[in-house]
Length: 241
Ligand code: SF4
Image (tube, rainbow, N blue to C red; front, side, top):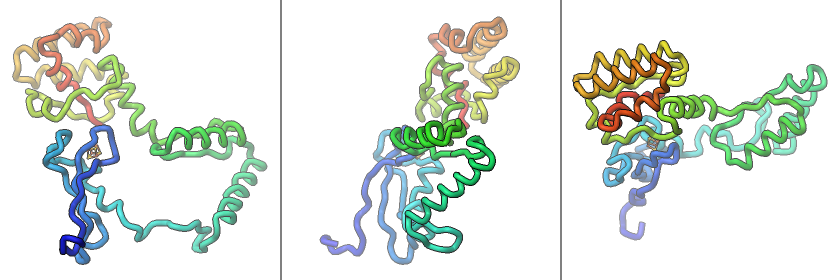
């Protein structure tokens, strides 16, 4: 390198996975570190102050060409793109001829661009003639969006890291959408939160929210009544999948 060091310096960049936008410090590996990029959280970045979740922490392992499929293959045979595309088209054509359009389906990446989704939907719905197309976006985010809208009235991130540090009680659970879709489960959750919290104002608010919800008031409307403890209520209700 120009400065006499053997390897490029670390660069400050951003984790590409989600909207939190954590700061990342990335450095090319030395020969005895293997192929992985050395990745760590950027301690000076305001979004994460040096912390990374498991996805961001594993970013280094996604870099490098070893083990990647770089050319089309049919079985163990490397083929050119025309041959590969023809092979796939023949397979679809045969299945559709024998069993109809609904015998095929696309399960598409959640990380395509809008134009890619358009093309894939057009191919399946417009040309093949089936509605059998879905993406992993539904599993990844749609349930969280539905839960956030039901719980908070909007699809929003309900807190930040600092909220968690300041909260009296934070509950992390799976499948919030399923829980909030069931009134009984939601009431049970509220009762548990109420029992666990040591904060008297929060306990009182949770009791009132629980009474409201059992009387048919929506969770978001009831929570909105509690201005003074609303942030803490929000934190108490955080559910991460
Ligand atoms: S490290 Fe995790 S939380 Fe941060 S941006 Fe990446 S995926 Fe999102």
